Length: 381
Image (cartoon, helix red, strand yellow):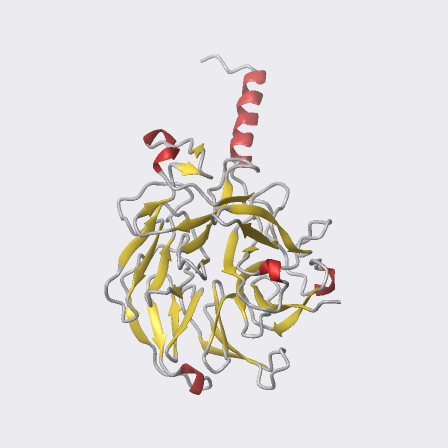
């Protein structure tokens, strides 16, 4: 057998290297331990300060009836109770009320009970605020969710219909599944019964909320990977009713056919986003601002926590953004609100995750990389 020419061997080697490089992740982010909050820029009149430190891997948040802030984690297996006992908006204690759980990202509060979401189970801790030091044994609300950990961590929240909404992410980067639960948002009664799919075609939502006037569900969705730095966009979506499909895995951003599955369904079959967000910004938490502390133009404006890209050659995200809506509830502008977690030198020191409005109108922001929670306030000059 005649050996292959050297030039051909070199070409094959280069192609193999290129193919591998296309799916090689950049080096992991390295924690510095620093929290240079003073470097975060906001619009005039706004201030951001540390609310709680030492909240390792702080993710989703909810507020108890007696003022206890609860926070879940994705990587630590812990759930925290955070207390501000003297009302100075600085946490006095961080108590671990549960540990050893399987990605307990999601927390929600109802009628004195804390609901906690693992990958495949929803637990309930009754009368939790009176028993923070010695929490009660949790009650299993529902243990029927898939066990896949890829996009398995969950954000949970109670809707205006008093049902608990629970997402089930796609078990892959891009794929079809015969199990209708994957790539969906589900909902169930508070006791775990009546579990059903509410919306489909959602790759991985880790944040949703309801419009304060229409009660429609709004959610962020993380776009697929490995289509390059600039495709596809992540999304802000609105589910005006049950049974809608938002495109995954066939269509991205309302108009981009997936190269693997797009030939099966045209994009016109699906509900397009209200706003395409930056590519790979990883939008997580989302809320409508309904308080009175911020200027009037922020009333009912959408705030989004962009966790930041992990596989883009030039990092993007690591910030808070806002989306203003017009009278038709369509986007009237998407722009940055708080930036500085991604300095010009590219050395990320923080990653915003979830948002929570306090009764005084200030805004809490969790950070699972800097292990803390911030508070944003406004005061006119």
